Amino acid sequence: MNTYSVNTQILRVNPEIPEPEIISRASRVLLEGGLVAFPTETVYGLGANALDESAVNRIFAAKQRPFYDPLIVHIAEKRDITLAATDIPELAYMLAEKFWPGPLTLVLKRHGRVAPSVSAGLGTVAVRMPNHPIPLDLIRAAGVPVAAPSANLFTRPSPTSAQHVLDDLGGRVDIILDGGLCLIGLESTVLDLTSDTPTILRPGGTPAEALRETLPELVIAGSHVASENRESKPSPGMMLKHYSPKAKFLLFSGGGENAIAQVQQIAIQLIGQGKKIGLLVTNEEFDQFSGMEAEIEVLGSGTNLAVIGQTLFSRMRALDKKGVEFILMRSLPREGLGLAIGDRLFKAAEQRIIDLDLPINFSDLLSSE
Ligand code: TXA
Ligand code: MG
Image 1 (cartoon, rainbow, N blue to C red):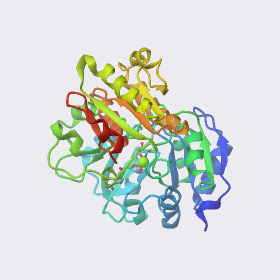
Image 2 (image 1 turned 135 degrees about the vertical axis):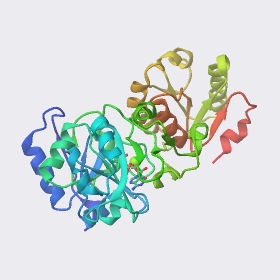
Image 3 (image 1 turned 180 degrees about the vertical axis):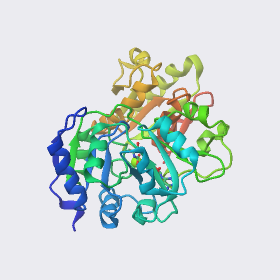
């Protein structure tokens, strides 16, 4: 089957009370091996029947995703965890009780019936129950667990609207269920329960602080959270270039009271060199940047990380559409959702973070790859 030439249908769905006839149509497409994109509370997902190997393979082809990066299996009832996983520890049920439906993905031992490519050949499987009526109704109607990565092209920011999905996957997905904007805007927290100590492989919509109440021994993987880190390997997908806008993303940290003035200086120099620049700013920063010859996208109040999480990917995409060459942004506090936001920014910047407390080499900024 040619994945690249399907006729993509966009169907509007009521996100609170999904129309049964639309859900039933989409569920038939899933059962026939097709791809259906749908909103969740985190980001839009690109779904296929998790028990159908060739359908799952179409996900990888449509997204241009490498086969070694495993997918999340979505279920609609807590008890259906047994459809995807086996040898499930009591802790998983406790966490499901507390956090599902919601933005928490549990990595468990894989059940043999799940298509092997879902797990990229690993013996484990990631499972979550989304907190959104559209996927819940869809999974129930299909009667099978649904494998779904974020519905973006590999390395692009995750989609938080049906338009984003269409921009990336138009002609590669059979149906896009348009249920409006995603509430959280950041992907789920991926928590590995197969290692000795429960480990966050990807910070996300469920804050580490909330998990620590149940799991005091919780570990966070990844070199970028070194202060909280112990020896542990991140998710396969965490080692890749990810969430990148097309523009070169410059993330600034430190600088204290002078930080905004310093970022302004750098912006002015880039503009002076004829570069087209974009700024991602908080409400509080907006006035100080508003006179500049730059494309500006406002994220929301710096004191409300939930709103920043909601808008971040969509504002990155907006700046890309405007064709900027550089995106400048100041880093945010890393508490609560700030850990997930910081992780996505770190990846967007492809690990290039500019410490304003150190001397800045401007030509390095321009040339760094
Ligand atoms: O919020 C979300 O999680 C969204 C929505 C659609 O549910 N999905 C999502 O999927 O973000 P994706 O494929 O873009 O990210 C899944 C992450 C990747 O970092 C992947 O490496 C990790 O989960 N993952 C999946 N299965 C895993 C496994 N068996 N072991 C370790 N990590 C796994
Ligand atoms: Mg993704």
